[in-house]
Each structure stands twice: as C-alpha cells, then as structure tokens.
Length: 116
Image 1 (cartoon, rainbow, N blue to C red):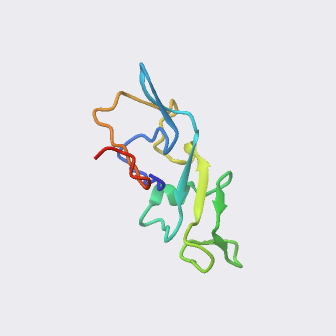
Image 2 (spheres, helix red, strand yellow):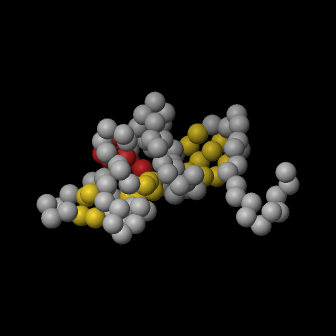
C-alpha cells in the first residue's frame, strides 16, 4: 500500500517497513509517507494536520501566499508528504502492535511466476 489513510480510532504504529518478532509487529521506519493529491482537512484530517515543521512536501505546488496547493496536477499527480510519526496525534510511541490475526499480501505478478 502506498497511501497512508489515518484512522483516529486506532493507534498508529507506522505506515511502512514493519517487522514481526516473538513479541508482535513493530515499525522501524519512524515516519509516514502519504499522497497529497486532493488532500484536505475534511477528507484526511490527521494527515493534513501532520503537515507542519519537519514535514517534507514532494511534487506539491506552493502558491504565492506560501500555502501548498494539493489540487494542482499540472506537473504530476504524485504529490507526497513525508513526516515524523509523532505528527499524528494518535501514534503509539512504542511503535509496536500485537500479533496479527490475519495477513494480506498485496502482490503484482507481472512476470506470471506466482502460483494461482
């Protein structure tokens, strides 16, 4: 998954680069990376509010007034933001979770090598 969609009902342990050991799931990245196309406080309030000092915008137009334009797609629709996990209010400072009850693997079999 390449887009973080924050859920305020759950503690965020990370959006990418997780490991699994005897104690459960853990994150070793320490940050988040999210798409910004059409980003608004209304549709993704946690991510929108995470864009502040120490966040890094990538491929996002900055308007003359200094504000980002998340709707502008003149150059690319691949605008992103990278920010520390603690920019999300409901983050887990330990960046740990328990053992999963189910695992979903997202794959793309472009070379037709995975079994059916």
